[in-house]
Amino acid sequence: MIEVTVLARNDEALDICSLELAAVDGAPLPAFSAGAHIDVHLPGGLVRQYSLCNHPGERHRYLIGVLKDPASRGGSHAVHQQLQAGARLTISAPRNLFPLAENAQRSLLFAGGIGITPILCMAEHLARSGAQFELHYCARSAERAAFVERLQASPFADRVTLHFDEQPATALNAAQVLAGPHAQRHLYVCGPGGFMQHILDSARAQGWAEEQLHREYFAAAPTDTANDGSFKVKVASTGQVFDVAADRSVAQVLESHGVEIQLSCEQGICGTCLTRVLEGVPEHRDMYMTPAEQALNDQFTPCCSRSKTPLLVLDI
Ligand code: FES
Image 1 (cartoon, rainbow, N blue to C red):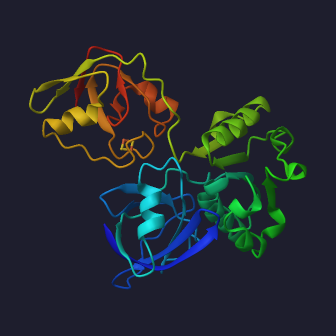
Image 2 (spheres, protein in one colour):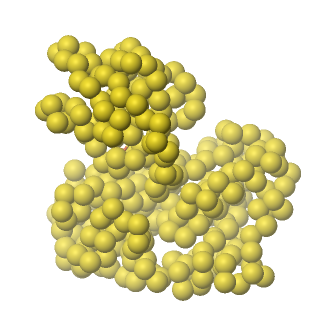
């Protein structure tokens, strides 16, 4: 945990602000790589993940961008309404679940809306290291596109293409951009779920392999819970067995019995709650693990995943 001060807060676009954070004691912050995020402990006890969008060589500050989301579960409202320059916060050290592939000969970066934050950091890194890349930034309108001035003033401005819904002439033709896959090309996408699905589906249709596709979700897609059933979980260390009703998560049940599970996103995105499974078959609902990791069925995310078998034995 790191104590930080909000050095500056800036409006970057309609409903998007940035926060510049520095250690309270003035010490250098932990190094990070492009695509990394931090957990930010917000007023009211919420913990949210935000991608770092400054240059990954910087140690004197972290920069995050935050969208005021009408569907917010509280995190983005807390930032927009309560955080000003001078505020103090606790953050985690950076973690990277969205790293750049090391062997790429060319990288295609796709950002939708606030998804520009990790993509911007990647572009800074790729440009600095002399790598080949192009960046496509899609937003509803120019006024909703953050960091455009920074992009246009950057040394890689000629590799950035802006696409705005309100200007049909600028529409992204994903199939064209993704045509002709090459084994050493890698694609990175971050943004709203529908946008990401479109980019990923277009890439697959053009023959891109799964290992060339990299993504980071900001929010889980809605899950159909109509057919959820009940099951039991057993705490291996104590032998206690608890019922998980259809309308409760494993994490909720465990916590209600005093078994503490570390939680953050509570949507299967961050991996904070990852728990080993000793017996039984989980029904995975996370977006944190790869399909190959999920298929091993030896761990699951109790914040959102359920069980295919009547009993799950957990290594806690
Ligand atoms: Fe984030 Fe469970 S709390 S995956």
